[in-house]
Amino acid sequence: MLRTFDVSLSVFGLIISAPLTSLILLLGFMNTGSPLFKQVRVGRFQKPFTLIKFRTMKLGTPSIASHLAQSSAVTSLGRFLRSTKLDELPQLWNVLKGEMSLVGPRPCLFNQDELIKERAIRGVFDVRPGITGLAQLNGIDMSTPRLLAETDAEMINKLSLRLYLQYLLMTLSGKGMGDRIRKNK
Image (cartoon, rainbow, N blue to C red):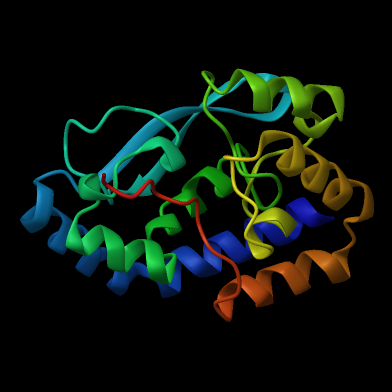
């Protein structure tokens, strides 16, 4: 049933956000010359998939977890996109394709061994990764692997249609935050 909501809401989101998406693409071309960022992430059953986001960091920034990246790598447009969560809009394609859900654990990188281990122990990879979830709404990011995996498992075990819709509404109203960026020294 949640998959039906994923498909319906992602189609709706892609349609209504098309003008904004076009504007961000144009601004992204002017800002970095490459407005989309694609990265292989760990998906359901630990299978790889290519996540799509609007680029928020300079070209050539190492492909590492956000909490390990330097704040100087984030562009001015990127700061705005991250603060408004608009950088996530292209992931609606990942949802439509069935690689992600609107609500679920944020997909990690294959080099995040500790997080992968903690999530595997708790069965977190049995579900599709999501654009938003309980951890993000509570400011828990990938810099605390065990806490993140525990929170993801709690969300999965309790997830209902009511909570799914509640998490979406909380995200759309601006609650939560993305992964922290390391401050420059």
